[in-house]
Length: 190
Image (cartoon, rainbow, N blue to C red; front, side, top):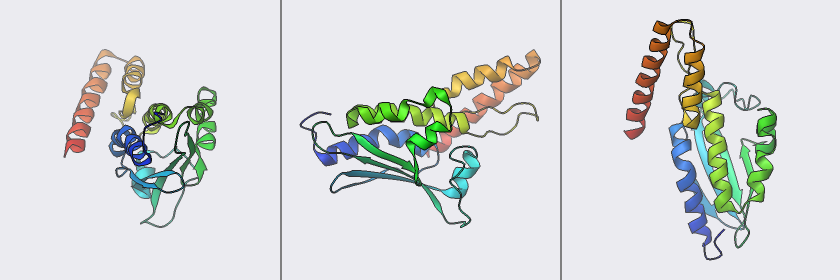
């Protein structure tokens, strides 16, 4: 972290890095506060979060229709400040990533080891991948499901096309994916 970066400037930087990913995935823009450390909260209606990401953080469940799913991030201040606590409604980033498999095993520690300004960039990438991995999409004629959120778009689309049983099915998958991506872009821009 830059030694001259003031606490509110770091909070703003964290929000600037994460807001595009979070808002594209149903969360409100980050709200920051500065006290003993820097806190950022992202909130999404729980029903919407579960609809979009049924397998992400499966222990996060609420019966209350008005409940929210929150991502809370806390960062230390000053030179060497780190993202020292990241939780989805009480589920730590370590716990969340442990459910994702071996390829994510070291990510939480790697994020925590970096200065906050660099850690948030890595966190943004991990969140993008998680959202992409868990996003639901409408079935394509009962055959395929294509995830179209975040940086995993090309990999997911390629896998869906490779799994297609015919050239017309590949064309249908591509056509559907491009249509959904265009819809998401227009919806996000509004």
